[in-house]
Image (cartoon, rainbow, N blue to C red; front, side, top):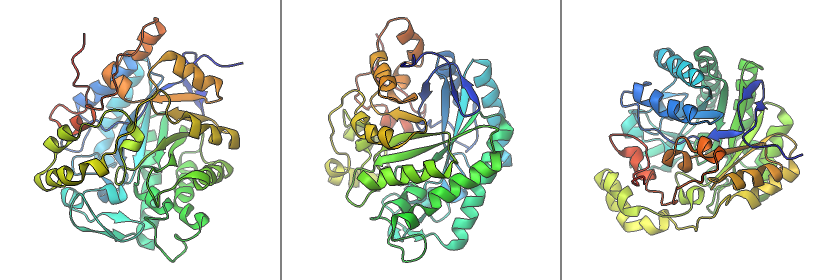
Length: 388
C-alpha cells in the first residue's frame, strides 16, 4: 500500500509527523559563525509550517571545512546556540537534522584563514590559492572530527545527522575519479575512492549508535566529466547500504565546484550571481558564466528516473530530492517506493507549503532560482519574488 506523504513516519529511531524534509540550503544567517536568532527563526518557520524534519545546513566539522569564514564550525563554542535551535524546533512540532560536512575543495581558504583540502592538489577558483592534497594524518583527524561533531549535535538535542557525501565536497572529491588522482589506498579503484565515505559513516554510527537517525546525502550523478555517475554511483550506494551505518540515503546530484545548475534546474540568474560576488569572481563569472552556470530545463521530480535505478538496487529507505513542489509529485514518489521527499526552493518560497498542500492549495514557486544568489545577501537566503 502506498503511504500518504503527509502521514507520520519513522526515520531510524525518530518519529516524524510526515515524510516531508526541508532539504539543506545555506542559510546565510551566521555572520559570526554561530547560531543566531535569525537562523533559529528561519528553521522555526518551516517547523511551524508543517515539515516533518528541517535540516540545518553546512555545519563544518573542521575549520578548513567551511565554505567560507562565516559558516558554523562545530565545537563547544557552538553548542549553546545549537541547543537553543533544537529546542525551538521541537516546540514548533518538528524534528531537526544537522548536516555534517567538510567542504574540501569548495572551501575558500582565504576567507577561512586555513588552507583548503581535497583528494588531490588543485587550484581553487574561489581563493585563487592551491588546494592541498589531504594527508593520512588529515584524513584520520577529519574522520575523528566527524564523530566528535556527531556527538556534539546529539548533546544539542538534534534528532538526525546528515553526512554530506556529494557536490564535490571533501568526501565527494575522493569519490570522483576526475578529482582523485591519488596512487595510494585512497585512490584508483572505486573501493579505494569510497573508503573515506564508508569510514566516516561508520565512525559516526559507532559514536552515536541508535540514539539518533544517521543519513547521508549522496550523488546519483555529479553532472560533469570525471565526476561520480552511472554504475559507480549505484555501487557506492550499495556499499553504504551493505555497511549498515545509515538509516536512509538522500539522492542528490551536481557539483558546487563544477556544475551547480545540474542540481537546481530552471532559471539561471547569472547577473544576480555576479552582482553578489567579489570582484575577481565577478569578472570570471562574466567570462565563463554560461559554461559554469549551465541551463537545464525544469520539470517536477527531475531526478526521479535516475533515482529509480537506486530504488531497484537498494532495499534501505531513500529520500527523493529535486524539483518536488506539488502534492501529486510527492505521492508519485511514494508510489515509486521512496520513503521520504526533500524540498528546498518550494519551502523558501512558502515556508508553510506543507500546510498549504494539505489544505488543497498548490506551490507558487516559479523555479527561477533567484533565491540562490541571496545566500550572499545581508538578509540571508530567501525567495526575492514578491508574493501575491
